Amino acid sequence: QFGKGSIMRMGDGEAAEDIQVVSTGSLGLDIALGVGGLPRGRVVEIYGPESSGKTTLTLQVIAELQKLGGTAAFIDAEHALDVQYASKLGVNVPELLISQPDTGEQALEITDALVRSGSIDMIVIDSVAALVPKAEIEGEMGDSLPGLQARLMSQALRKLTGTIKRTNCLVIFINQIRMKIGVMFGNPETTTGGNALKFYASVRLDIRRIGSIKKNDEVIGNETRVKVVKNKVSPPFREAIFDILYGEGISRQGEIIDLGVQAKIVDKAGAWYSYNGEKIGQGKDNAREFLRENPEIAREIENR
Image (cartoon, rainbow, N blue to C red; front, side, top):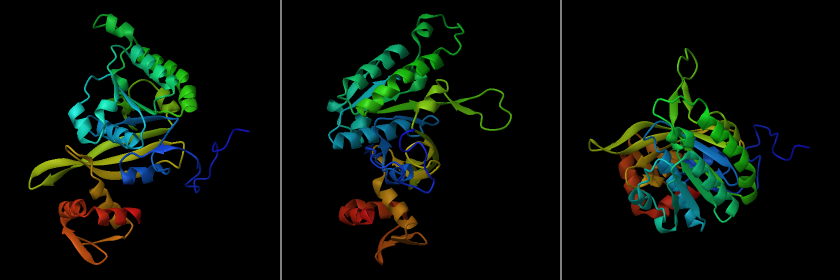
């Protein structure tokens, strides 16, 4: 009556099978999502505090999609896309469609047109907070226009979701966090742009920086935790922790080590990591270097 997958047992890890996904570039996150990546034909929201790795994560997804031969578009409402950084993360920049719209309406119209064209596999909107309604841009500084952006988002999403499903396009909204005023208990954090996105998103990822990665007192990256806050294609509430290294993105080697230790494929004794009884390094940095120099061992651990 309601279609398959509208009800599932929490035990059915692979409740929705034939979902096409795009890998996130992070092993741990692909596992946490339960289907091996972000689902196509769906809306995904990635939110978190500033410099938590939101754009890095989406750029990795774009890079993964381009490896599969897909076309990606980046709607840069924040006017802050660093093209050099993107190409460092493996994004094929010449192939990437980029638009820097002036108003929120324009951004969403462009998104709608791109989705309808059916020739785009993935669209990233960076960020919802920067989708400013035309009335607000044309108005005065102090004008109070309550709920305009929320209405804009809600209208756009109502229009978009059906088309997105039909054309099997992955649409990622990057969002920022705001504080609700006067919340005494419970979580004072909320995302911008009203409630519509919370409803329409099939997957919502909460991304946070939980620590720094140091190499001889110099910070070389961030330790990042991603929580799958909402997931309509697999059971939610799993999380993944990975390292984002400056200038190279999500550290694949670091993840292989962490997941290897979790799955007891890699042994950890004190600070030493070893695989098949052979020591691969003292401390995570050295183990990471070892895997970088010996990609075949990395691949072997990964496949297990």
